[in-house]
Amino acid sequence: MDDLIRSHLEEYGQDPNIIAQAPGRVNLIGEHTDYNEGFVLPMAIDYYVRVALSRRKDQHLRFFSSDLQDRKRTSLSNLRFKKEDRWANYPKGIISVLLNRGYDIGGLSFTVMGNVPIGVGLSSSAALEVATAYAVQKLLGIEISGPELARLAQEAENSFVGVQCGIMDQFVSRMAQAGSAMFIDTRNMEYRHIPINLLTVKILITNSSVPRSLVDSEYNQRRAECEKCVSLLSARKSGRSLRDYSAADLRDSMGLIPETTRKRCLHVVEENERVREAEGALKKNDIVSFGKLMNRSHESLRDQYEVSCPELDWLVKRAWETEGVYGSRMTGAGFGGCTVTLIEEEAIPKYEARLEAYEKIFSFKPETFLCHPADGARIVFQQDGS
Image (cartoon, rainbow, N blue to C red):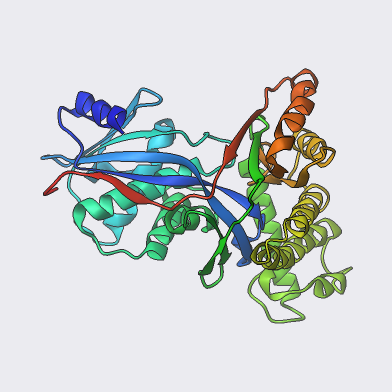
């Protein structure tokens, strides 16, 4: 915190008025279901993005990443997406959406600092969006509910940044509760906090370090295939998303829907059922059943939805072979990124020893780190009278 305050002061010549933090997230199960109005079971992780904010006397916006030592600037009247602005497009998008909604926003100075790994599927962008939105909301005294702030952040990424993401990442970053996962119905945004009581079992993330170069194009393709499938299915049975169909409906559609599309949509339908079962297992603290559902989820993502990659499959297989592992799967959009593993604490060294061959085989160095279920966005510093 002191480092962030010091960075802001050195950059702008004044202390921040307010600092907000928002967490990254890991999705325990429920992958590629959120943009199909399905169910997800993520949790916030104890890695954060913090945004320090102070008012300006002009109409300019200044952005400084303390971690990257990178600066961007624009004005309220010239607020538009620029590819070269990279990370700054996310807070710019938040300001743009707030302006479009009629809020009166003056010039602002931002400093960003965080430890959420970037580009590995742990939602560093959503954490930046939510921390920005929450800081601006509290500084300016804007009344926005938690779920509405998540929708606002999603809109910024959809309409300003141009990534057609679902709402899960922003929602959990804003609404999570320490010690719990979240069951979220992404159709109506109903949610439940599900306590996680793992005792000696730990949640271990493994970063494959694979550049996710295919994510955007393949993500958009999968989303288009899901929409196409719904349009074909709706000719026989009314529905507006894959949420409204069963595995039997898809089996009965052979000949109507291209086989590759049907197979991918079957993943979504069956994944929704796995999330429901996983919620029940977590409520009963049945880690064995929960782990088996994670394994089935990975198999489906690998074989049906086809968003895994050899590196992720290798990491998951090493986990499955390790005594003391209950379940392991890829997490996030795929084509690189991370795996998430439920593992007995004493088994972690054995699993990590198995990873020694990874770099020789794939030329990437894996990274492991433990995470714990964390709180959603909150204010961590505020000047009196700001």
